[in-house]
Image (cartoon, rainbow, N blue to C red):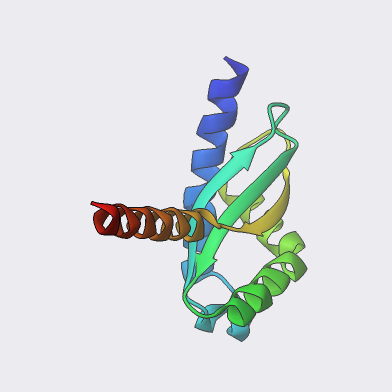
Length: 121
């Protein structure tokens, strides 16, 4: 039951953070970035939430946005607290979502293996 609650809270927080990022950011540098909140993970005790995001741009842009989001943690947590009714608002942190990179790497490896297999026959 506790795991289900954490998943529901994570999904709710992800949706609300997406709205805050779209509409409620004061920092112009973040407003200009194309940020997509991919997923959220909340600890079973609901005390910590990690948001995984992606940014359109190169690695330097992604790192810049990561740093800006981390600097805005307190503001974003307060915004979430005003939108979501929880007894305690989890501490928030941000991480770059690397799943797309991993999928691209796997696709490249598979393509290379298929190419090599095709040459051996």
